[in-house]
Length: 211
Ligand code: AP5
Image 1 (tube, rainbow, N blue to C red):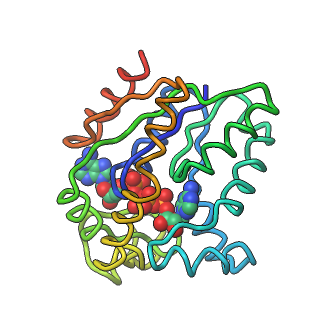
Image 2: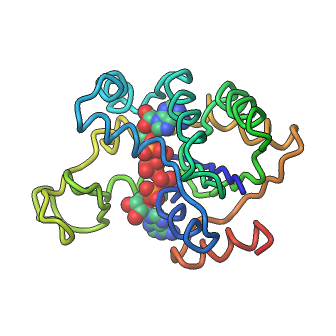
Image 3: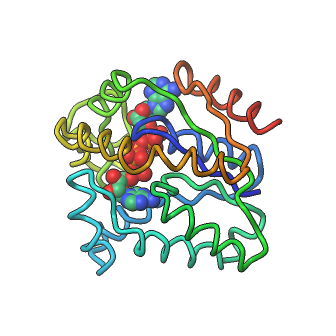
């Protein structure tokens, strides 16, 4: 089963992906996490991606499709995958379709996590992450110790107010059309209310998948 999680930055894709993956017995692939890990490790990919990510701009499609093609070829994804953060442009949707076709597979469903812009700004402005293990926190202060690994809590550069605004603009201009692209292609698409308790959102997402 191949499921695309779709939605504005901060809609809850990264929160829901591991929960759904565990319940469905499949893996997750989060392009943002892959890129942040590469950036932290200082690889060529990470250095290229960092400039885009810090501003809240999209990393070029060719880079993203390279990551996705490599991952899909891995046995870890043979049972299925929840894609978190990809697909974000129509060329990525086309590239993913072509990559899956070579494997005799297709996207089974696209879930659109629906949250207002006010709630997005509230969530992302409040978020801190551990600089070492990337665990997110909705409370605490910059510099506090991570409860999991003791690393320092920091604000993601793209969670600064100007970058949040830019990410929302980029979503409307480049990502929003992807949902209609999938609908037109005949893929199962569903919009899920992604507000309220995290567990309730998971239940709604499963229901949208017919589970
Ligand atoms: P990425 O890491 O994918 O960032 P994003 O989509 O902007 O995702 P976020 O992590 O901000 O939001 P989310 O929807 O995952 O929400 P989350 O669960 O974290 O990408 C970062 C950057 O990498 C991009 O800007 C781009 O530069 C690059 N990139 C990545 N993929 C790319 C691609 N395909 N093409 C081009 N460039 C790409 O939740 C957010 C917060 O809300 C958390 O603090 C969480 O605790 C909280 N929260 C979650 N659910 C709830 C709830 N129900 N109620 C209250 N709070 C909640």
